[in-house]
Image (cartoon, rainbow, N blue to C red; front, side):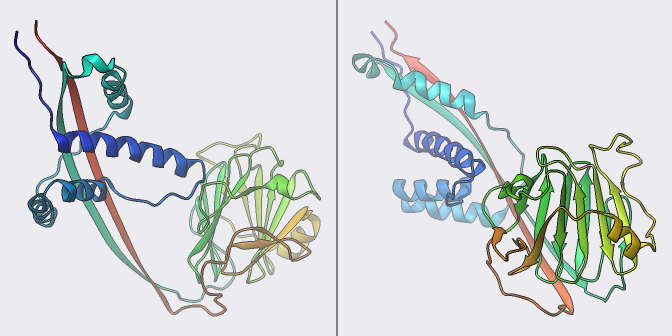
Length: 313
């Protein structure tokens, strides 16, 4: 009678960590606050438990940045394989071994962006996706997604879906909904820090139909997905800045109204009650002369294949 058993402690620890990472990702998607760690962080912690020399080898590998090949991880298969071992009767577990083969790749992207904040007079439409005022950048990503970026504070608010409100500096992708406001069921207005008015025609349980932006005598209009004449090619922002701002603003209902405050993307109702957002940075009242942004992205791909080996009779 012969026994074929292969067991590798580091591979089994990698399996456990991957399952933990999947559970953490699910928790973050549901809006829970979970400490973010990369797969590389987990691996370094586990290697430290195995041997100090393994940690030194891993650090040296990360610094050398070898040629990287991306590998997909199928966590559903991984879970199934581990569960098969865990569910075996205890008196049979000594007869079963696990062989795990892993592949790890690390990809790092870094980018530095410098932009001079030159004053802008009124409203400008760059194309069907972007419009801009002196303080704000407006992005119509698609027919159901609209973002207001405060360029002075780098804080943004995105209106998306039916319609949800997502402020960038609060955990989760949905920090509120248009139905949180009760005065109107189909019109909601955002009053911005420089006097710009952004009015959405969108049912509280619907998709954006129109967006109207007013600043002084100027007016920009946008067509959303819910409009009958919407088409991805010809809708979103009109590239023409109209000169009927005052008259058109008077003729356009304001509906529910929220006003920008705090650090740029905190929204208050007419009674100055905070509806969406949280002040997480300084209150900015002057245009910064320039903006310097640093973007860092690390992608860690890890694949583990698992094979169970039973004792040969």
